[in-house]
Length: 295
Image (tube, rainbow, N blue to C red; front, top):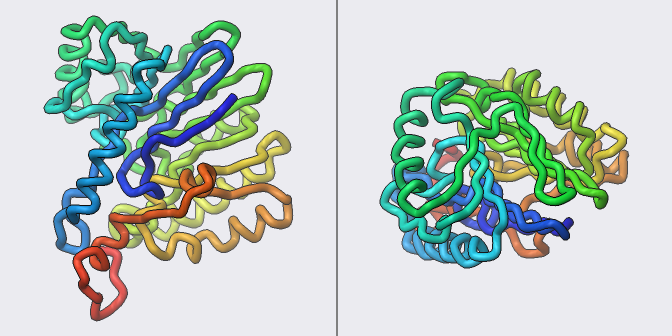
């Protein structure tokens, strides 16, 4: 299998868009990208809008040859907004989070609009919660719905395992660093070789993300690293909205060195420089903060 990232927070936009190429077909997970509406009291910089445009164009371009799309939940950094043209999904096979069950009000409303648009372009959506599918000899297994991070009020997401004879790639979606036992258990049972994980939401520490959440996240990430099968742990998304993300995860890097395993971002996995545009928004505007702040 070949793994590529088309958009991610470490590449400059809010996204986890992953493209997995197998000999049986190409799978795109969460084909969306967005920007943080306000950060440090500032709207997105022009450079962020330019990067978002490039990422969306790349997603649409690669979509032409994609055999299967997966949408793990209905937040706009994971699937297209209502205003977006989705002709690139015309006639495509799409595995989706159940729009009717284990879903909060806002995502149910968003999914309804999205499904209406999919019907207009002749796409073929199918509910994936807790199910297994095949693409040739490639096996695709979905978790039960698990909480979006630490709070069910944000709704539920699906984790997904992609498995071929070449190995197993697990995509966690928005677990916010694996802060819930159900999120962790699916990973442990799946025995993946590569884990693509939404890292802990440290930029919201003290508000939506607690010290206890961070401690639990680090403990769970260490458990994942210690799995015999795991070779690479890719941490991105919410985590990369914090310029000090490496400091928070010092113990994770120390553990990876002891185990001789790789901890990477989507950018470093792709061999390119990390570009944390949202976290650098003050810098982009030429503003120097008077004191440290992630708000």
